[in-house]
Image (tube, rainbow, N blue to C red; front, side, top):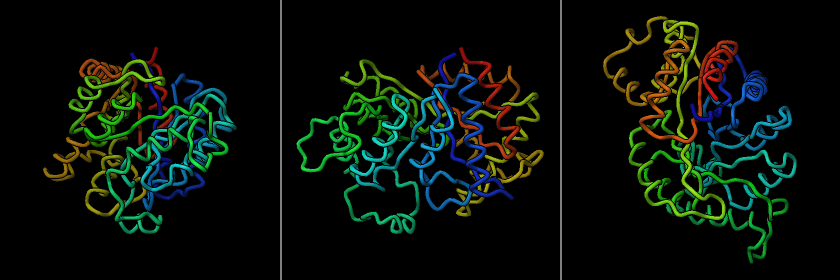
Length: 326
C-alpha cells in the first residue's frame, strides 16, 4: 500500500452549520495525524451550501494550529480567483507559522458559477490561459530572487511545495513542464485520468523541486464493518452528486437505504461515471479495490475523500482505511 492523505471539504450536513463542520474538520485532522496519514488538504469552493471550506487559507491555519506533525495544505486554491501576490503572502504567512508543514495545491477552475465569480471580483474577460503565467509568477514570489518591484512579505525565500491540480490534460502538461507534483481529481472527474497520468510521466522535466514524477490521485472511500453498511453511508455522497448535477446543490443529506435502486437509470449511469474511482465496503473489500486501483494507475499517493453524513461514521471510515496503510 502507498501513502494516503485526506481531502476535506468541511461538509455541512443537513441540520448542522459551518461551526460544527469546522469542529469536525479539526477532530478528523487530529485523528488522521495519529493514524499516520501523510497530509490533510482542504479545498476552495464558493457559494456551495454543503461546503464550508471557502476561506481555505484561514481553515488551513486552524487545522495546522490544532495538529503537530501532519502536513496541511490546499487541494486546492483556485488561482484564477486570486492574485499570485496575495496567495504568496497568505501561504508565506502559514509557512512562517508552521514551518515545513504547509502544501499549496493550485487549480485552474474557478470553483464557482459565473455569478459567484463576479462576486469574487474576478475579471471574467481575462485570458483562461493565464493560469500558467500566474503559477510562474507565484513561484517567482516564493523564490526570493525575483526582480519585481513588489516582494511577498512573508513569502520570499520560503520553501512552500507547489502542486498542480487538474481533471484534464492541461494540468498534466503544466505540471510536467514545470517539474512539479501532479494531483488528479479522479474522485469526481475520472474521465481523462489514465491519459493525464501517461502524459505527465512521459513529458516530465526534472526540476530543482522534484527529480522524478509524483502522481497523487483522488479516491473515494466509504468503509464500514460490512459491505451493506458502507453502501448505505455512500448514499449521502451519491445524493450530493445528483443534486449538484441537477443544479440544486444542497447540504450533505442523511444516508438512504437501497438508494441505488430508488433512482433512475440516468442517475445510476452518471454516478457510475463520476464515482468510478471509489472503494465502498468492509475492510477486505476496500483493500481489494484500493490495491486494484493502485496497480492499474501506478499512483504514488492517494488523496482519500469520504463524505459521510455522521461524523463518527466518517472517522470510522478513515480509521479502517488507515489500517491498510504501511
